[in-house]
Length: 570
Ligand code: ARG
Image 1 (cartoon, rainbow, N blue to C red):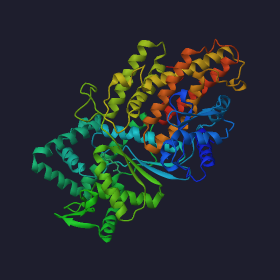
Image 2: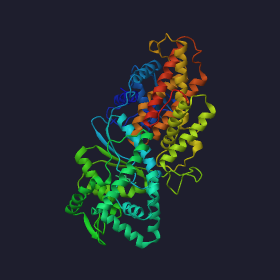
Image 3: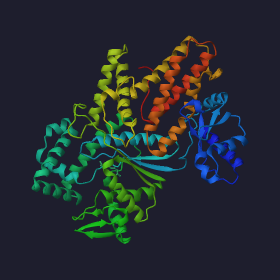
Image 4: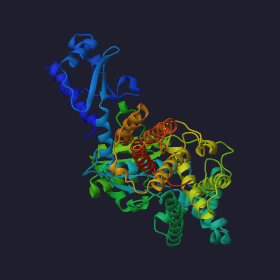
C-alpha cells in the first residue's frame, strides 16, 4: 500500500477513535514542503472546530491523546493553530522506497484498470499548415496519453485529422490555377501550403473567387471525380508528412480516423437531432438552441447549402466512438479558441442521450517572439523546421563542448533538441500564457529538458564509475541507510512520485510531472554536492549509490511520461 493511503487510513481511524460521532471520510494528510513540520500534515481540525465546538488545537490534541502509532510512524505532534505533524520512520522509509523501486511503475495505483479512454489529439488539417496550436496539442496530448497508460487505462489515441471541410474548396482552386508542377514534385507539402495560402488570401478580397471555392467544395462533396482524385492526393501527401513528424517525436496513434470517416454517419445524426426535437431552422440553416440560462449561443448543425459542419461531425464521432469502444471518457486536446465549439457539441450529445464523459483540455497559444523562428510566417511555424532548428542549435552547443564522435553528437542533438522543445511546452501550466525562447528551452542550468537529461547522464556516469572501481560488488547486496537529512529528504521525494503521476493525470496537467522531476533533480544536486559518494567509506558509498540508482530510474520514468528520452552520456 502507498504511504499516503496508509497515513490517510490511519488518520481517519484515529479521528474516529477520538470522536466516534464524526464523518471522517474527509480526513486527509498532505505532504509538507518543509521537513521541520514533519513529512505529512493533517489540518482537518481547523474545519471541524464549528461542528465539534472546540478549538482546533484541542481537537488535534484529542486525536493525538488516543492515537496508536503504527510501525511506520516515528511520532506525531500538534503544532501551530492545530495541525497534526506526522514524522515517518526513517528505516521504514528506506525499505519502502527499495520496495517501490522494484516495480516498473513505482507502485502507482492502477486507477484506470479495465477502463478505456479515447484521447483525441494532434488532429491537424490536410493541405493546411500545422500551426502552433497543433504542435502543442500533439505534445500535450501525447503526454496525457502516456500518463493515462501509466495508471492503467486502455488508451485509444485517435488522430482526428481535418480531412474534410471548407479548406478543400480553397486548395482545389489554388491547385487548378497556380500549381507549379516542378515545385510539387520537389516538395509537395510546401507547394500545397503555398497554394492554400495564396488561394486563401484571394478569398479575402475577391468575392467571385470565394464563390468559386465554394462551388469546388460542393462538387467534391457531391463526388465529382476530378475533385475527389485531387482530394485523395492531398490527403495522402499530408499524411506522409505528418507521419514523418510523429516518428521524429516518437508518437504513435492507435487510429487516424479523419473527419471524412464520419461522413456516412452525418445524415443519421441529423435525423436523430430532429427526432429528439432539438433542432430548428434559422435563416435557412438547421440550428440547435440551448436553454436561455445556459448562455450558450445557438449552434449550426447544417448549413444553408445543406452541408454538415465541424459540430455535426464531432457529434457523429462521439456517437461512433461510444458505440464501438464504450469509453469511460473521451478527452480532446486543442487550443483555447475552440472552447465554445466543445461546450456546444458536448451539450448536444447530452441532449440526444449519448452518455459519455467528455472532457475538453484546452491550452493557451504559446507566444513566439518575432525573432524566435527563422521560418516563421504569421502564426504559422512549421513543426518540422522547428525540430530541425532545435537539433541544429543543440548540435552546435554539443560540438563546442564535447569530444564525442560525429555520430554520437548527432544522436545527442536529436534526443536533447527534441526533448528541449517538448519540455519547454510541458513544463508550463497549459492554460497560462507562455513565451517560447530558445535560450530558455536549451538552458543547461535552469528548468529545461537539457538540464534534466544532463542530470540523468551525470547519475549514469557516477554509477558507471562505481562499477568500474568495484567490479566485484553488487549494489543489491548492500543496505540503504538514509543517514543524513539530505538523503532522507531525497528518499521522501522519491516516495511521492506516484502522487505526482496521479495528480497530473487527474488534472490533465503534465507540468505537475515536470515540476516533480525538476525538484527531484535539484534535491539530487544538493545530495551530490554535499555528501561524498565514491570517496565515502565502505557501505555508506554503496548506500548512496543505491539511492542514486533509484533517482535515475524515477527521473527516467518521469521524462518518459513527458515523451522525452534519456542518454547515458551527453
Ligand atoms: N482539426 C481541428 C483543427 O485543426 C482540430 C480537431 C480537434 N478534434 C476534434 N474532435 N474536434 O482545429
